[in-house]
Length: 265
Ligand code: KIV
Ligand code: NA
Image 1 (cartoon, rainbow, N blue to C red):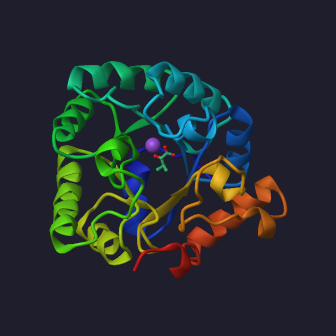
Image 2: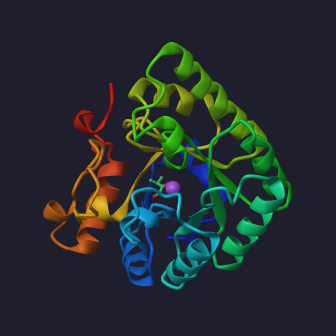
Image 3: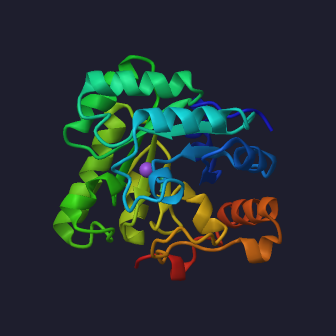
């Protein structure tokens, strides 16, 4: 298989090929994911919760993200590497440009940021400066203080149409990919149909263009946090760590994961 590039994301959607994404935080897991044929690797700011032991992603810094991005990049040859802009590093276009530059110089090919609203200007600013952007809508963990917890988003008509409008807006602003977290299956399906850019679901049903899971959830590693409904431990059927990654990739590609038991109707 060829090494992934940003333009190949839109090609995959056009061809109806599912995108398989996992989070990674170090070189050895990244190398194992590469060997297992994972398409996209995300250095998530979830590292604050699964590696650093915090109870939210808010304490994660740009220096933390750059360090883990550089570690992961050393383990990869084919997958596209995406890194999260941590809390408030994307508060203004100029701050986001500085943070994103550090993450790209550490080896990322794309940065991810949460939300729409004032972030639309940030997305446009980065894309105009040759920095590919992945948007992230629905449950945005950096909003945990306002949201009051990690909960399903877009449950009523008003919030669902707001989410659908935000999704169009981030694509219009130039995002090349969109993560949808914890949204009802029909809403994620409608957003996926609305957009030319691929959607990557986590707790967003099977009709997204791809799926992402946090490494620790896929392996059933106890990170001290409540296991959300949408996670599946693939280690049992996979038989080994690389086997678990292969089982996950196969299940995403053949549409068997996520099932109804992992989704919100
Ligand atoms: O930080 C992270 O791991 C993420 C994914 C859950 C999408 O943002
Ligand atoms: Na994140």
